Length: 157
Ligand SMILES: CC(C)(COP(=O)(O)OP(=O)(O)OC[C@H]1O[C@@H](n2cnc3c(N)ncnc32)[C@H](O)[C@@H]1OP(=O)(O)O)[C@@H](O)C(=O)NCCC(=O)NCCS
Image 1 (cartoon, rainbow, N blue to C red):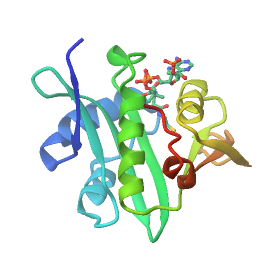
Image 2 (cartoon, rainbow, N blue to C red):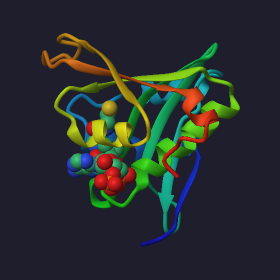
Image 3 (tube, rainbow, N blue to C red):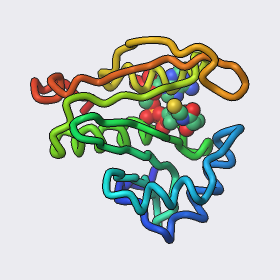
Image 4 (tube, helix red, strand yellow):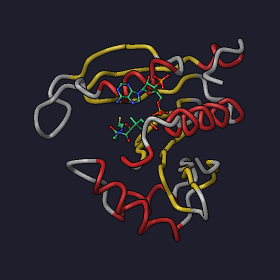
């Protein structure tokens, strides 16, 4: 497989990111959502590219004071199962470490075994359940990564 590059998302990525978002989620983020990420000084969205620069995944991360958040992550269905999701998450955890986050939190659909397994494999642990968090009534699993683990050398790579 082509080498994967992880780099900051830029406005020129939006058509590819929006097309991928529409393939990956029943209620996709809009252009405005992604633009807000690009314009926020607190956010640091990243894309994964393959080959001649084709966007095959992305991850939206944000740091407010010392509290990190993973807001969105997706990998092109044709490129899944090749470690790209883990590469994105590992890179972003390294950046959270550089930016002195204390912990990183996220919500994930209760039934999303692939994503939960990805997060758990990178060191996130279950911290709660939010009832009917999603528009269709599905619960969210709340997960957290304590950056102390990172400082002690625990990460996915
Ligand atoms: C979740 C997602 C980002 C994973 O991306 P990916 O590139 O396929 O993941 P990776 O290849 O890096 O896999 C890393 C780990 O994730 C888990 N995983 C990935 N796909 C899985 C699947 N279909 N079933 C179970 N576990 C899975 C495994 O633990 C895997 O580790 P392993 O290879 O050692 O078994 C991808 O499935 C996706 O885009 N899903 C749709 C969007 C989504 O649900 N995003 C999460 C919103 S919270």
